[in-house]
Image (cartoon, rainbow, N blue to C red; front, side, top):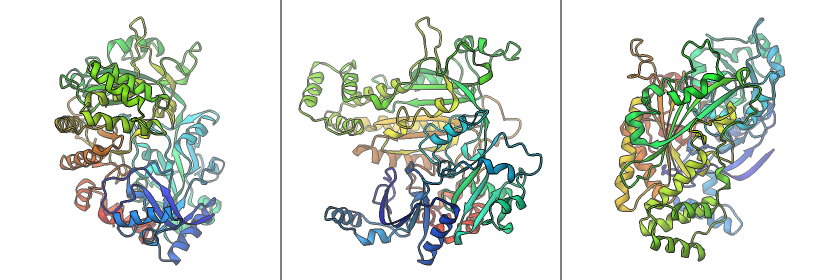
Length: 615
């Protein structure tokens, strides 16, 4: 299926002056293929018409890396397009700035039945899974759990709305410091690149397929295009759509498991000083726990466990960016422990424990009640909010729109404390403190993917943000960046500039991907696995609601992150990143560019790649 003059919506892009459409793609032709052959035909048609082309996932990104944009657009052109829509037409120059696009949403087929016919003799396929790459992670999680026996992704990010190709291609990760990002779960890729050429890409050092079987099963793949090469593979797994269309992937999966999730409410300053439950952050990032949690865990694990308890596998700290009256910042720490399904007691029905609340169920009354119950809200303030609500000043069709109008009202009176109260309500809803009436922990226990991703329209915080950035640092540097970002937020409050959203610090293991953000962790052997030198990456995500202040705040923090050596997430706002930034941060860039030239070539080049020196 092909449509002409289509407008496709991404998330908001706010810091790239070459893209004024805030995430909208104006494409002359939008293809929706259902087979790999149709993908090839779409690519060939783009080349015949001398246009570039790009695959589109689920529109989950904040970045313009996805857009098949060939020339800059101006604000005037965007305004003219809006006016043209009002009068029932289109503004051609804006569409001419973009190439063609491929909607991959129909490419979701389960290919697992074909996998045994591809692998070398003796290869066990029970922990490999083959699927078309347009499937969303949400749907993939369900499909994996339906296998017999059920399997799962080893790690996931905090949301599940992305396609598996989109998530891996942009370096998406979770908070599991003992394992690499999602892209490192890839074992092979089926890519359709320039010329509509079909490629099979796999690591030579971990080869598990037979090229003759590949070509017999997929005749469109020539023998010369079965690539068993570590460099090509490590380049392609985080390719940002520049390698071509990722048609299908083989994933390394694990037996289905449960996670035990503990949340702790504190302040960033307290946590930074004494850690989680008295355990320093660096130690928590190595999996150490603390006595209260150990008392809960010990009965669930075999008595012959040498340590007496398992190590945690994840660390996430979500911070309210608006300071308290005493200068501290409320925060919500999360750690997780893996529980094999075989160890789940027969008496325990999953989900168990205190289940996080659904942010989608919050109402305007919930937000205003959080404000009026704040100790900073006196009788005059209560009266002002009551009158504003009665007179419809907090208008909007959705809770997001209502929250934005509420924030604008707060700005009019410099009620930064009111925005802080709303953020805390959302945090406490999504990250309940798991303490029972007896003082003992009552943690959430559920299948791993349900704990890691919540649900697509429920507690997933990025869905509330109008824009977001995420730089990556060595873990200890990430802690210092959090301090710098909070200081910048504090400095804005006297000027009535305050962010509406959250800041989070998540730990993650290093990646093998040449352009993955998680480049940190390869420390000398005598420094690895020590409290002083945690061999993990610290990822600091700042997601904001999108009021007038937030755009400038994001740019300020992005500038600060680049100045401190951070590597910006390819799937989030990164419009201030340039050629020099990219070359300084990725030592294997030349190998990545060689792979891109081989697979995607000029057909898959866009304005983003040119700005960042990726071509």
